[in-house]
Amino acid sequence: MNQNPMSEPTFADNVSESSRHVSAPGNSAGPGLATTAAQPLRTPSADPSEGSPALPAEHPAQRPVAEGGVADASLLNELRGVRGSTPSVWFMRQAGRSLPEYRALREGTTMLDSCVLPEMAAEITVQPVRRHKVDAGIFFSDIVVPARQAGLGVEIRPGVGPVFDHPVRTEADIDALPVLGDDYEAALDPIREAVRLTVAELGTTPLIGFAGAPFTVASYMVEGGPSRDHLRTRALMRSRPDLWARLAAWVAELSGRFLRAQVLSGASAVQLFDSWVGALSRDQYLGHVREHSAAALAHVTDLPVPRIHFGVGAAHLLAPMHSAGGTVMGVDHRLRLDEALTMLPEGTPLQGNIDPAVLFTSEEARFAEARSVLEFGKSASGHVVNLGHGVAPDTDPQVLTDLVAFLHAQDHRGA
Ligand code: CP3
Image (cartoon, rainbow, N blue to C red; front, side, top):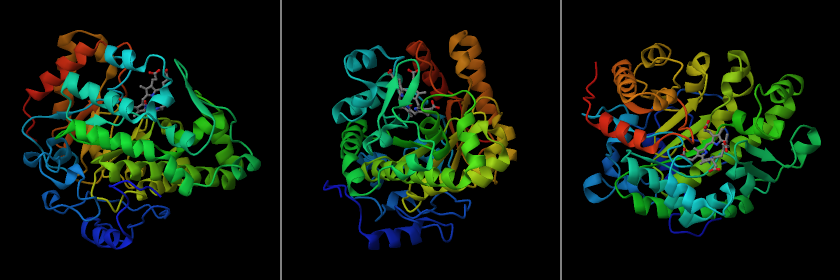
């Protein structure tokens, strides 16, 4: 396993931690233990400033901002349901092609290679924080990086997305998936190193770790690449639910261990991205997907970090997704935040949901949209502002910088 200074705490530490911080009974599953019963989970309730034995002593969430840590950073407070006086904001895909400094640094390096070069991944993660003054970094990586570290052939084609050498469609394909053991943990070392370098650079700004949810990642694996309607994946789910379940469980383990590695190395919150889940009906989600997303999240439920769960076009899945074990729901721009709240347990913090299309309109329209998102989010316990989906590559970065400054000048008191 990993030999780094922020290595896995002992089992005894995990046990005492899970009894202190995880309030949902029966959900203290550590790595490798999949929860099948998806319980709604609450945000860890213990005082974050007192430190946690589940996290390494040098983890930034072990110290308050005044001491150079992030334990009481405003964005983390919002994610725990504690409002600040002004809004906290970050943007999905804030790192990347919209930034000239990213394009310059990445030149000559493939996307997936850049993710396993720790200095490069750390620098790319910090770039948008430096430029836009957003309240969190999102770790620079991709939802298919874990698959590549596990040994699968996958590349990201510019303008297309992830493409797998061998689509996974048959029983033999699933039998051939690599075992996720010590070799995989060792292959995550560049990720751990990148996270450590990133948090050292970010100082009092928290780092959000992330992973792809089983449906979205498995859909790239089954289709072989991006797909409009995920037909082959949905057909597999219906015709061979046994095979689908094996594949989804494998991805849950893959993504779950990736999440855990990021948190133990210094990330202070996580987001599970289920970008394509909106293609599913509620029954398909509940019957074939939720338990696997729950299993991925279960890899970090014993750690005292907020867990954001985000899907695109998933208004009909908001409550089922919440019941998979996130503590915060990310909402896309298709659903108003006040409507989202009516579908969720009282007190659920929200993240979202400025329409990325307004980034291509006038400043007046952008600020009006930002004001209305704040207004509709007012009755949430905590609200972290974000876009409804990622920053498009041709977004003018100055527009994002100005939007952050505007948001930071707004009043964020609740309703
Ligand atoms: O700033 C951030 O948000 C951090 C990094 C991040 C990337 N991908 C970097 C990236 C994150 C969180 C992701 C997640 C991801 N990757 C998702 C879920 C989020 C979402 O947008 O729904 C998905 C579906 C993917 C798969 C993927 N990777 C796609 C569809 C693409 C775009 C392909 C293209 O060229 O249009 C990628 C590539 C990718 N991931 C880029 C970046 C910065 C662009 C690569 C480049 O610079 O050429």
